[in-house]
Length: 459
Image (cartoon, rainbow, N blue to C red):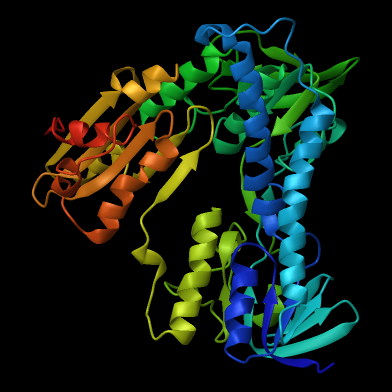
């Protein structure tokens, strides 16, 4: 086997395998390096396993609510965590194995299943071997932050990765962190049957969202019996006889919690600390993210960084778009850029939040004249019919250009319906294009034109 390749790709997350496909189709020889699990975060510890478990949790929740729909279920509802885990494992294994099989069967692609480290700007150590290439693509992903909180080393804490391996239901799960990952797990395990407390240092949940969304999400979670502790300062831990004591200082409530399990969900860091990037001269920022330009080129010519390790997105969809940007520039004479994409993400509690573009707070900061439209889910027929009418939708419009600035849909199907507006934003069309569209009844999307027909000045 030759030690020189046209390209080296490190990391089998969302961007890497597809990029290998484009490179090999173009006739290049590719060395593909993955040190652990093929598929990256999304397949192994993110989207696929968590949404598989969310589906199980929703089934349990709906079963408990069966009488609301005139359905009688005799006997108690019991969640078999071993069966939940087995279902999740089977789903992710199919995806992971498919990716590995694809790569190993790819013509002109040599797969290395070992850690990688730079020896120089175009030489990589893979196990005991040395490989070189003119082009190197870093797609190494990220992992959960383990903050140096007092007592953290004295307890058996969980992360989003290890929590997925539980086969027994926690009696009381204490979630440290009130953002996307923490809230998804909080609702999931509450629906499985655990007592759940969310501990957040900030004044509200999901601080990056508008305050009305934070408030509504808190109400949704509390309606299911989840305890929320905000403004928690000086968080610390200590072992207890039958679990873990969590010390907090909050405006309300006891200063100490007792839980059987603790989940740390306070952020993520890139997997860049063991790549010896300094030997290649690749620049990173103060958080360890690889610094890239608008076309994902690093500070070293011939080296690119894609996915979670570049700090430009942190989502599966942005990682895949990174692949599209690099491939378009390399092969299609299409100068795509990171700055072309519009902010879009979802929070997968139930009901989900889909959000695009600017928040209301960001629109207000611009000082430009804007319009706003809102509609509660209690006035959306599809939501009422399904018995899931919590949440609301809202949209912000540039009063002069009539273009959509941003929108949020917190409600049943919101993560899907939000794309009605996102696509119009990408097309550069005014909101009236959607307002005049005839949508199918009964759907959530049919009320988007109605909301757009009732805009008011943003005061």
